[in-house]
Length: 302
Image (cartoon, rainbow, N blue to C red; front, side, top):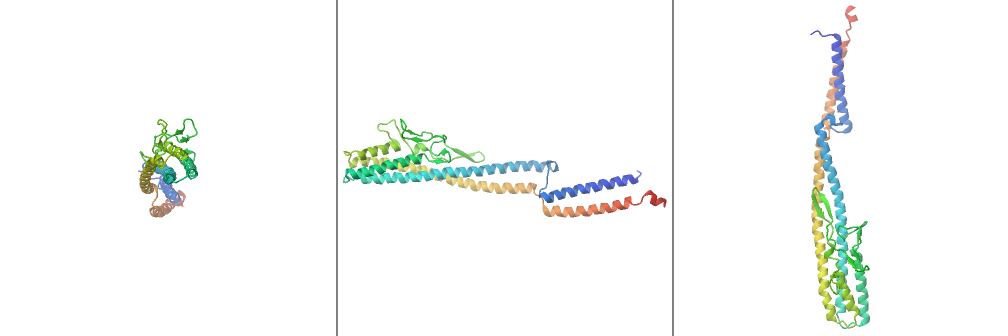
């Protein structure tokens, strides 16, 4: 095949263009720190990158859910702790009042404090986190306890509030209100937490009630204190699991970031070395081109 001057010049320009393209790719990698800057650079790496980023976005959402879970559990536990203190104080007052040496004035003072503690329990049962009630199951926007209503209303919603803290794993973050703040209007007199406290208040305000009558309320109060303690232990167990899951999610985030980095990040030492090599190759190609183009027809004719 006859090699013409035009063919030599065309090949030289093509080689120089290819060399510029390679240098441009290496400079993009140096500027961005990434192996690829567009999907067409390496479709496989690009597809893997999309998948890994999707995993990281899910992990970020799970971490936000952990914050929500902690708020639910910690606020619920705090409210139940105060409820335990209120019930224990009511029990102390009941023990004092069961002493038949107390006169009517002293019993009335005790009665007034029990009434206030009952109101405190109502307030704790209506505890809100943000705009959400903590002790009304999944009906978080409705007030769970309204003893002024006719008939008095106390939540019976047992549907658990669950948050997804890992892929496909949902954890209940609320306490079951029907095991703590209770009122049963089907009995006469009403029973449950608020019904039993109302019975104690009635006994304290009745001058004919004896210490034995008040003593009967102690067993009921012990049962309610035990219920609150059990609800707190359930929350504590869930809190421990939430902490374990959060540690696992933190580890998954580190691993996902490493995998993403291995997939996309450029090896800077290699890129710099390749760039220097490519610069040398381009200089050599330009030197060869200068020698090819330099002898023109006029040079031979002279």
